[in-house]
Length: 150
Length: 304
Image (cartoon, rainbow over all chains, first blue to last red; front, side, top):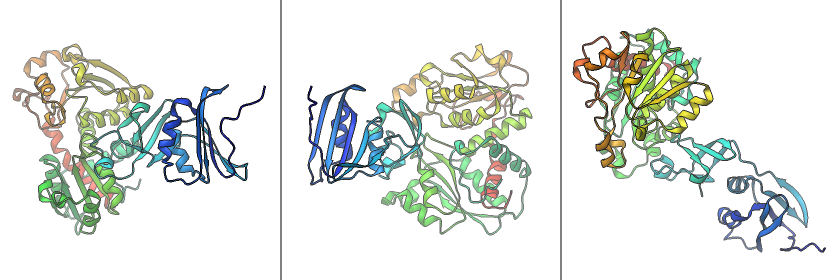
């Protein structure tokens, strides 16, 4: 059977594969791709042996940094991120939840100094699956459902 | 162990060895009055009211020959003009050698410590941490029980919102206690702290009736139901006065039980208990002086 290609390959840019289907659009939001000039294509509800259903996003002319990849680690912990140059995989970025998270997420405590003075948050990752983090300022713990991604 | 320039922000930053070292230095500070901190200036930045903490820091500093400047309400600071805590810290660090901060915003002490090159001591950041209170609590327990290990300690009152009891629980977990959390279910110890105790293998009992466990206790730590921490005043009305200890307790306790309270009390402990040998809460408040002298001397590099 002919393998269907849902979205075409890109020459240069970033491909994010193995996104949980229900997180595909959240990943786009999180990465804040609005200002990008290159073509962005996304597909979701694709069949996946590993995941059942998955999403994929291809971003032309944009190379994600490790910091940006860390942002999606919370919502798409098993995503694979490939940096593409001239149709070849130049680099694979590991999506793994780091030991500490800077900036990417927001403390859920309205009385935390990071929210009152609008400064970037810092979090210790206490547990990776399911994720649990502690704000390094107010020391409140947040479970996955409390985490607000910036 | 070098504490010079170290910030004192959260009890979680201190190992068991650190805690024991601070208690050891505090013992050398009992009744001490000299010029150890001569030429040093303490800035006390109190954005919300406090009697004991601010006065005992000032007394500790002046008792060791240092000088104190600062303010004791947000209204007296430029905060009212919209100045950020970060900017306040950047300015104040130039005026002093050590900063003591109380601010109702959680995490503010950590931010001030990041902004300031001078050591910062957290004197309470909202519902989060109040590490010097915890240190004086440990100091008091050790003083009245002559040990810290293997004690049966009851903690009673508002265990949900009370920062004192959270920090104390964390600190005690280094000393293999059996902990009794005595509170109505709605004000019980948050799960996060119970999970941590479980992880460390500390035995704890959840109870709402003090009389069921009172005979087992070596220490009973009583806290106020704090009106200012309740999001809903109706909830507060429901629980205020839930526990009132008086002399009727005396037939249900060990002979050498000691009763502690971080003060101020409202009506949790009747004054009739004050004169009994069980009450150690005023002694506890007095222990703030040697602890704060020790911390000031340590972070200023004048004690090791």
